Amino acid sequence: MTSEAAEGRGRSPRRRLFWPAVAAMVAFAILMALGTWQVERLQWKLQLIERVEQRPGLPPVDLPPAGDWPRMTEEQWDYRPVTVTGRFLPGEAYYYLSLGKPKGLHAGPGYFVYAPFEVEGGGVVMVNRGFVPEPMRQPETRPESAAPQGTVTLAGLWRRDERGGMLTFGADSATGIWFVREAPKMAASLGVTGVEVAPFTIDLAARHTPPGGLPQAGETIMSFTNNHLQYAVTWYGLGAALIVVFIVFVRGERRNARD
Image (cartoon, rainbow, N blue to C red; front, side, top):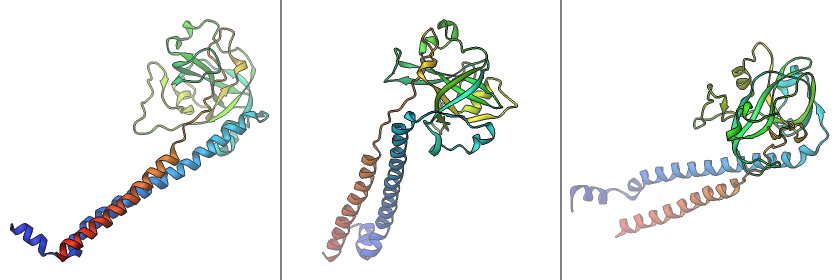
């Protein structure tokens, strides 16, 4: 028997179990935290699905004035039909996505076309005019797609802003392509400065599709995957399995100590 083995056999069961117990407790805490996080995400997703199912059918309301915009929360307004009067400003920004279940003719990889809209009474809102397929991003590739001129009244759905994470691609300033919907930054990239920019966007209703058929309005995405319950059960199940494995390990160690 080597000296290391002899030393290990000579230690008390409690000393031999100390570091495995610490490692098991840390792993169990991590698994429980992951399971709890998924439960919280499940509650958020259920609230989101409820908003999607109920709010788009509500009667539209006038968009509040710019002074109220910072106090408009996602919980109260997301997917709420609104109307707004003003005029389109020059420029477009392009939000990349793949449209899987279109309400119109076009689907697949492409872009939501966002344009700055100057609201009567003050402020600018970034408006999602609709979807264009990837090869038709540039306005010259889609005839009769220009935004209407002059003062118009628009109807659409209020949409929350997004925030990018560590793994999110940054915007391409050369092409105006965005991977995260960040309205104030989009507006700034189009030269909109010195004015209040809404921290949300508006997805136009389908009736605002131009005569040329693009951008294809009314394509707000309203279907979401909801696997958070399965994920929570998985993490909690792994925590329970860890407890069982550790109990078996402790019994084995005690049996070895008796032998």
